[in-house]
Image (cartoon, rainbow, N blue to C red; front, side):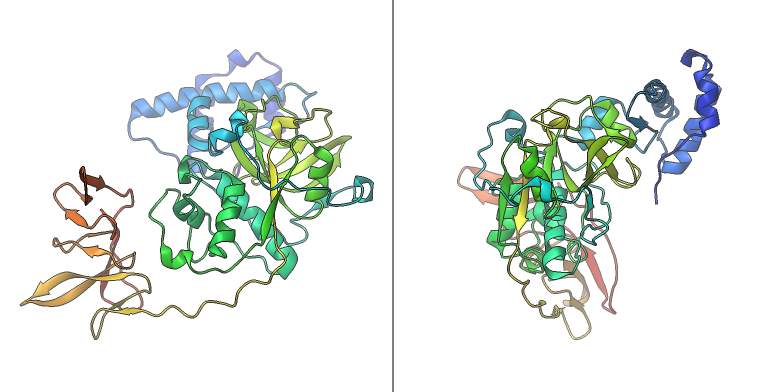
Length: 444
């Protein structure tokens, strides 16, 4: 498991006695080498490594300057993003919320009302992790699918609260299949994700439809495995922190925030109070609330892995007097509703028989990989049912792009105005499993 690089307090004490400019290149270079080993970073050329060292040194100096302010309520630390410029970081990890959320053009259709009679009746602190309603921290990678992680986190929470069973749900299903309003790795909104699950009559598990850190064609067979259902969703009225608190007291809640500040990138521990704007560009999950040293806070679950923050979590200030909330956290909150039981488990998947000795998994297509005297002696499995097997015996295409162009590695379809090409981003991979002699092959 990746952990944050933390520096000895004695080392900080030494640094504070001297100007930051007195840090020798050799000291930073040694620290950079240790950081690379810890986070398993390597670079293709010496030029790239030198450039990343310079970026690392600039970020390190920024962190030290912040931490030298003993009045700050939070500290920063070197984490897995320390070799990225701030612009690179924002490009890789932010922008996952639909543009309409940041612009204020979003029309919210399911506004919630008062949940509990008074906030005075609520517990002074609450942590849904302690109640077993929060799955382990996940990592979205460089795919802008924060909205899907926020949505699955809220659905995982309410499912556990209602059924007593904590089930990790599939972000990949939302990324691949929820395309009515959401845009996969290019952004989306939690409300639209809830609507998709409602209309689909459920969502598959993370185990069955695992996250790939990139968008792909919708696996319809996995989409149809409806393990967990929800019955509706509610939006917390904008800029109403009291109603947001009441919602969090009932279940984990999805929220949009602005995560684009440099301090947010290197947050380590403490109560985060900004600075940050209210231009929403990231989605997270509130899993509780509490107070520390006179500061009230939300417990935030992020989707950047456990090397960020407090093992993937943050304390974000609340009750600050700002109606929008710190980083706009009060502006775009919503939560799913569940009253019905989950459907019974799906039947055990049945294999697709290729011949007497070979078969593919349910939902896959048998394609011949090798022939001898007109008889297929080796089969491949294309991961989507009703796929087109290409004549090169190495690739397949989806049925909606049925023309194989092996020379250019493209799948094509004929339209009235010409031919349209599709080149899915998945890599091909070979493998064997379950006693079948098969070639697992994805699209070009």
